[in-house]
Length: 67
Picture 1 (tube, rainbow, N blue to C red):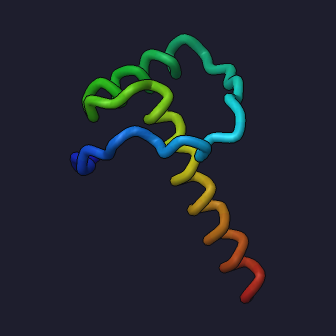
Picture 2 (picture 1 turned 45 degrees about the horizontal axis):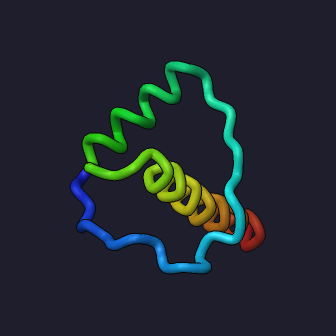
Picture 3 (picture 1 turned 135 degrees about the horizontal axis):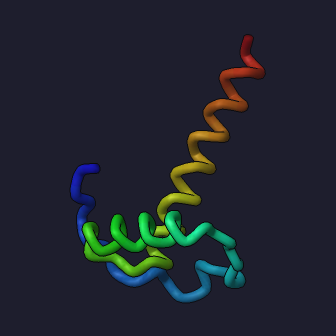
């Protein structure tokens, strides 16, 4: 993974509510390792993954509807 530019804190009001996520111990360790590598918090990294996954999912849906 390439290094991402350092971003400031999430703007106040951006997150509407916290979400609980259940992960296997190995998955938690992997998330924590990647977050540390990026010098980010675990919460920031999980949000990053969710937003990236949502974008990929939306592209996938859009490509299916055009075929």
